Image (cartoon, rainbow, N blue to C red; front, top):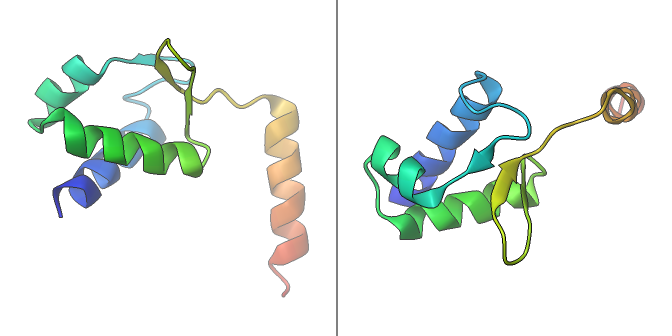
Length: 85
């Protein structure tokens, strides 16, 4: 499905650093860069938002999430607690 491929590409771009933390994501630019229409792009952004990788600001824009050092510490602590299970 096209939205799944778009989602994977965007996720790879975030993890690979091509999309920087705090960067504003413009749908028009991303749809051209990924050669997809805006509908699968929007579906992908909703999915990434549910995973906490992007943040939508109502009536504004979508941004790549910017994690603080405290956020990383909390995620790492939870991973340490869950891995033995």
